[in-house]
Image (cartoon, rainbow, N blue to C red):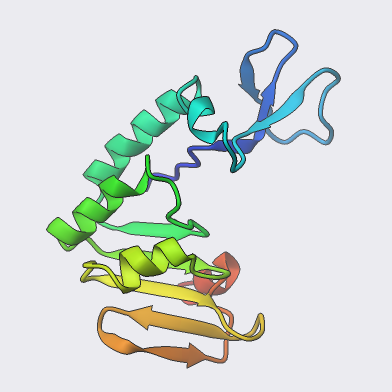
Amino acid sequence: MNIWKVHGSLDWFKSPLEDIVALSNIQEIPTNYKPEIVTPGTQKYQTTHLEPYRSTIHNADLAINAANSYLCIGYGFNDEHIQPNIMAKCIRQNTPISIITYALSKAARKLILDGKAQNYLAIERGATDEQSIVYSSLDKTPLTVEKDIWSLEGYLSLIM
């Protein structure tokens, strides 16, 4: 299994030397270190061409191309430099894709639910935290479930 967070991580920081370092399991941010994560906006694509994002995206592409299935957690399908590889495999090779999220984005709905993906499961939050709406390539009618399976914790409760 490969887990890729291509726009940075909560434990990435810009050091006083202006490089990006990972500092795991820290209680507070060291002096003169700044959190380093790519946020939506005009600089997003420019920033991702720099290290370590460039290498991270390259390695994520390799993992995407080698994968036999995908589990997307909270991914909105709004990154034109990421999802084309995922969608190409889902459409051309019928690669299974599962999505769990608070709310499916317009882009996710267009690419997965209204697109040509043939083997998908998408789950989003319903009217409350304890309700989920399930979309499946097996049935075009969404199913409402009175249980949290849209969050990572809820989803994992199905298999643990």
